Length: 211
Image (cartoon, rainbow, N blue to C red; front, side, top):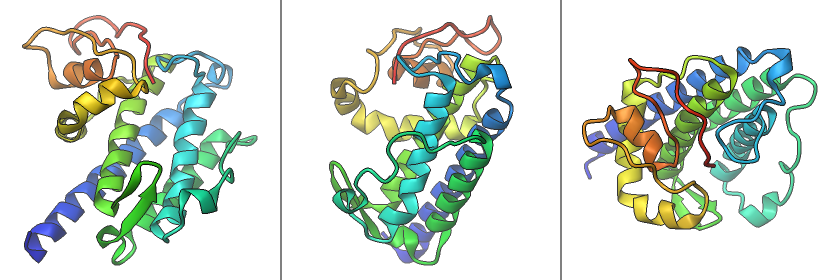
C-alpha cells in the first residue's frame, strides 16, 4: 500500500472514530438522572454499566498506543470509572482516546491486545465499531435517537463481515437475528450482532439481547 493511500485510510478511520465518539457522547449527556439503572439491550447491563464499559475502553487507548501490554495495565481500569459525574468521566476519557489516536505517528504503530498484537489502524477501527453499536444500545435503553449515521453503519458492516464467523462463535454477542434480505443497512448491522431493530420508518426498535 502506497504512503498516500495509507494516509487516506488512516484519515478516514480517524474521522469515523471521532464521529462515533461524538455520537455516543451526545447520548450519554442526554441520560436522565433516573435512567442510569435502566436495563439495556446488552444482557445484564444497565445504562451505567454500558457507559462504564465504553469509558473504560477509552482509558485503555493512550496506554496501549504508548506500548503498554495488557499485563502491565492490569486491573487499573476495572470496576467503576464513572464516579459521581458519568458524563464528565466519559468526556474526559473520550478526549484522551481521541488525542492519543490523532497524535503524530500513532496510527502507524502497533498495539498489544488480549488476542495478540495488531495495528493501531485496526484497533481504532474496532473502537469506532464498538462505539457505533453501543450508541444504538444506549439510545434504545433511554428512549433517545436510535438512528446511526449511515457512514458509521457502512464502515461497521465492512469491518464485521470478514470476522463474522469468529464474532458469532465468540460468545460475546447474542445469536444473529434473521432479517429480510432487503432490510436497511442499520437493521442488518444490528441483526448480525444479535440485536433486533424495526426499520427506521416503522415502530420503535424492540428490546433485544446481546453484548
